[in-house]
Image (cartoon, rainbow, N blue to C red; front, top):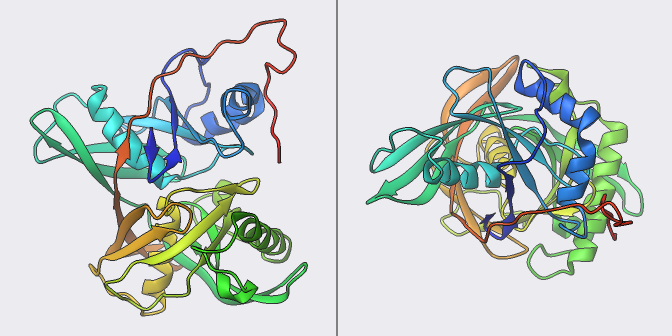
Length: 327
């Protein structure tokens, strides 16, 4: 499937059992014992540098319809909004939810960051657009100055939307998220990620497993509420470029805008991918807390589409059967 142009390879069969008594422990098990299969399915020659995947697993939560592990070119993320949008539709179409309801069917997806509730348009047996309610999202720090190689001192905001992101206006680097070359945007964002990782210590009230910087999102700087779309581009994992507006990134950006008083509850904002022009909407729908952080629940909405069905094999004589990447 794809959501806003960002691919999602949903693994439905053939994977060994992923051991663990909770989704987090399954994530650790996959990383420690099954990572060769991630490389087989995400990397070339079966995938590519920017491939993304989802492995459906059992959840220990009684209310969950499914659990999921997310994977990419570097490892395993804790949240993925574009994948949740696709998985919501997939779960209804593939009957992971017993009795679909019109006009919307709720699908509870247990992600490593927590339970995410998706709502899938359903009418006359067909699925459509999907919206989801995030885990508590919050601004971790604003106005943080880091020293970025090649760019000097750069001020960033850090926000959490199921994963932590650094946010910077692309104009700080003389770039435009819609017009600049992708290579230049990737280089700037990657440099920021490297600087924040080395100079800022993150923590999350729920689990240390969540306390890592997933990537950097360069924006068009239009954070004040407006009916017009605001664009951004997300560079995550090992310099992987999101083709969509980034669901967890939209979540984190809405939380950041709400924290700054730039957006109010239930004000819907449109977020556009600088890479493809695809759009999600996002709004803060509820104030809450996450430990000591003032947080919000964010609703993100978008559409996912099917692209095909594949069956992958490995032959013992194949010297590159285990996958490789070209940077």
